[in-house]
Structure formats: C-alpha cells, structure tokens
Length: 405
Ligand code: PLP
Image 1: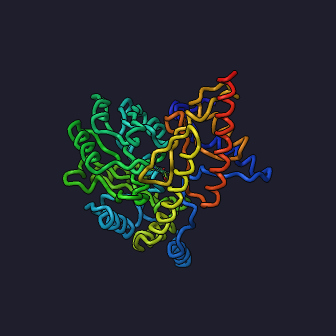
Image 2 (image 1 turned 30 degrees about the horizontal axis):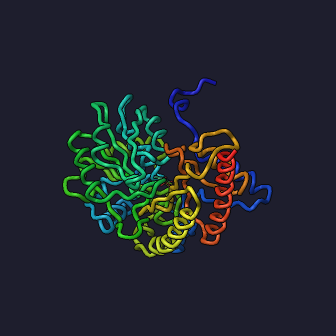
Image 3 (image 1 turned 135 degrees about the horizontal axis):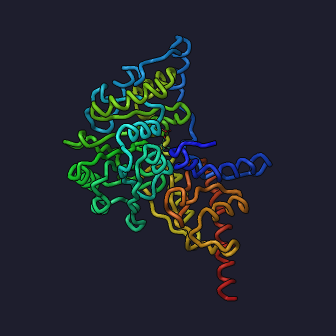
C-alpha cells in the first residue's frame, strides 16, 4: 500500500515499545513497578464526574459549536486570568480535544512546508512528529544538564534562521521537570519578538510546581499576546487525561484558523466532557493542590533514592511529575556490547531483569538519561528504587570486574 509521505515521515510514540513489553509481563502475572505513567495516579475529582453525569441526564449529548460551548470558552479565559494573570477574551479561546490536539491544530494553522520550528531538548516525544505532520522542519536546541536543562534565550537566538517560524516552549518540562525562571522566559519572549517568530507555550504542567516556583504564563507579560500562543490542558491539572480536554489561547486571526481546521476535522470536543471541564475550571484548585502536596513528598524520596545509587546523578527539577536521572555512569552495557549511553537497552534490561518500567532518554532526544514518573504510590516508589539499586549495583560490579580483568 502506498501511504502518504506525511505518515511515512512520522514515528509511532517512542514510549509504546516499552509499554507493550510491560503488558506482556503483566499478562504473565509478574509484579511490574511502573515509572512510565504520564498522568496523575489520582482519579478525576467527584465534582467533575458528577457534572458529566448531570450533562448526560440532561441529554447534553448532541453536537456543540466546533470551538466548544461559549460558557466553557469564557470559563477557560477567566481561569487563565485568575491563576496565570492573562487577559484573553472568550473569542480568543478554542476548546480542543486535549493539549496535543491544540498543538496539532496550531502547527497545522501556522506552518508551511520547510518552515523551521525550534524545539528545546530534552523535548516531549510528540513535538518533532507534530511539526513533521505540518510539513515543518524541527530544529533542536540543546540545553545543559548542569543548568538544570533550562533553555537560554541566547542559545535559542543562535538557532534562528530566516526560515524559523515558531518556537515551542514547555515549562514545567516533560521530561526534565525544568521550570524556566520568569526573567529568562521574558528574554526568550524578547528574542521571539525581535525575530518576529511565534512562541508556542505548552502549559500542560503549569500547576505542578514545587519549592519557590509558581504557576506562570508568559502570555501575562505586557505586550506578549501578539507573539504568544498558549496550549493548555485539563488532562494533568484535573486528573482528566481520558476526557480529552484542552484549549488554545491565541490572537483572534489564529484562533479563527484553529477553529476552521477543527470544524473540518474533529468538530466539537465531546459534549459531556465539556460540561465536566466547565465545572473543573469553576471549582478552584483544591484537587490539584492536593496532588501537588503528595507529589512533592514523592519527588523528594525518588530524588534521594536515585542519588544513593552509585554512578547515577539526578538534578532536582522544580516542576511536572518526572525526574530525569543520568545513568550513563552507572551502566557498562557490557552484557549487550551497547554504549553506556544506550538507554533504550538499559530500559529494556531493567524491565527484563528487575521488572521496572522507565522511559529511555532517546525518546526525548537525550540518550544517557531515563525518565521516571512519580505519579505512582510511595510504596511502589520504594520498591522500584530497591530494584533499580540492585540493577545498577550489578552493572557496576560487572564493570569493575571487567576493568580488573
Ligand atoms: N504536552 C506535554 C508536554 C505533555 O506531556 C502532554 C501529555 O503527556 C501533552 C502536551 C498532551 O496532553 P493532553 O493531550 O492529554 O492534553
């Protein structure tokens, strides 16, 4: 079958292979510790679920306007104003079927063939493929682990060419957890303005911040709105990953373009999910604050546990619910002949030998690292750390024996 060039250009999700292996082990009754999840392990709060049930009972099960019901668009901009300090109007907000759908629509609406899109590495797995789907060219801007993977305006500026159209920023970051300090973010915005490129800010994890970091939106800075597009998501903030609720905030002309695309593709996001989202946005932040308080404890434990493993280093991220340790110094690859930085192999062996799921850094453009989600119970974190410790200690023992030999 001759498939389109577009579909041939992209890859299925890089996390899929590990997850398929995990399913095989679980089916055999093996106790697997899963550090893979990209979603909170908490259920959707009851008040949100009840709103969906009410919508069902009231037969709100028909088409809605393609860009979402007006009360929800209004609630989204009010929520964003209240908690992130922005000033959007409802007509500048389009409701999408999740943040990924927002990113997809925005890139489809903006990018022409050959346009370059700057992506900060380590990056969320889907960015390069979403850009390729829009016939764009991903251009990767590396960050430095020694600076906590925080992108610098000066580095971003160096990567800009006359073909650059868009810069995608994700703070807090998946996979590194890095939170860009507000002054650096402002400098990045200045670079975008100076070179007349769009800054697409993926705020999926905006409320998952720890320590001194605070939820922040670059769109709240004076004069930002003309250069900034926001992709927002209710998935993580309200533990609603399966409901598929997200939004785009953008200048009117772009919001209209996103709406036009959506009207000719998915049409409206699911009606009853929209009524649930309305309640979520009107219901305050208690549920996300509760999750963040729990995640903060797990974060401290997992970082401490990883740092105890010889050869593993782990910076302390200020956001999201992931840690991104470097394990290149803790593995020899001697069993497989692979390079120590081949973390696809490390993840495979960790799963086979210790039944622990981690996502290899290669999926995020960063070999040598592993991504661990701490959206799992403290008890599973303890068990996973024990198994990882035993795995890497065995690796180091092989390495020392090889050096002596
Ligand atoms: N952006 C980032 C950085 C993510 O990690 C994810 C999900 O993992 C998304 C966007 C998409 O989330 P959703 O489509 O569920 O809103």
